[in-house]
Image (tube, rainbow, N blue to C red; front, side, top):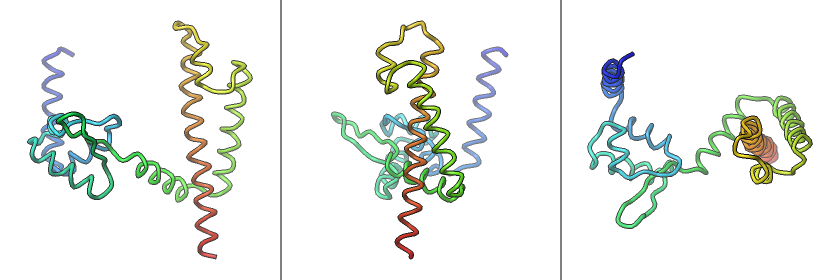
Length: 171
């Protein structure tokens, strides 16, 4: 594809997204994907809205707890609320899996983490990162997978604990 074809395709996708969603929905989607935070101007550009519209919707997202706002100099930076995202993931996992599936997944992830510890003779991905050479492609890939597995293990354990706590409260 030529660059012109890509530009036409991007314009078409953006136009379709704009036609099928409200300004609030577009701002919400952009903020949902924002880990490090962005200004209202940056969010406006990505969400295809004006800056005042982006700012208004970002403030509404902050008021509902979905987003957080931080001052950086004269700018306000908006990003998704990490705690809310985490609790949403925990609730979804709890709702979509049985206790036995959670336990099996936790056991599998613990075995995978032990395998990385044994394979690299280190106790954490951070320790592995200090020891890897810059050109060790497989090592860096394993490091990334190890970090993700460790994060998923924590979420699965939290979902199990949340489920057990909920049962205790309703008993």
